[in-house]
Image (cartoon, rainbow, N blue to C red; front, side, top):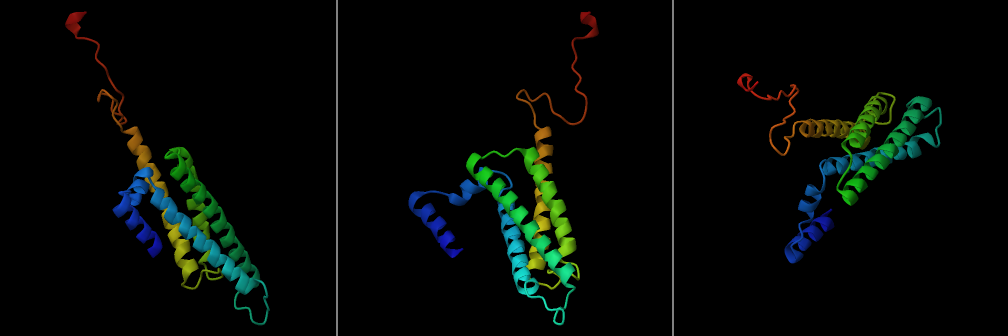
Length: 189
């Protein structure tokens, strides 16, 4: 992290390149998608670690959790993390390479991820789940769901703003009312 910050500072001072400003202006919600990507990678990694530690050599005498429920929920955590990571990586790459990402696609993906992470919160942080104890999996499962919810809210806000833009003449504002245009006065007829 420090190396990245030093490199950004060096580029800004020597070459006048504002990397942070360019990335920030590149596309809306890029930072949210990048944060969601990081959270999903932690969820996937923590679930894989729990799977490796607890489910590979399960002995019924030493098992604290019901092995089927715990291991099934752990696999679900790996799947949720992997799917979320792939989707977020694709959206981040699309935003970095093209500067354009269709709002509808982002909205649908955000909704799917929010529902998927909602189930992830329910299954992973429940008493029989691998994230029941306070730790990385617990926090990042909740943070992933929160990020996906914020993505939906941001997409919805952009959708509302796109519907309320004025035309070039400044006359046709979409506000839910039916536009009425007068043709002429009664005296003209």
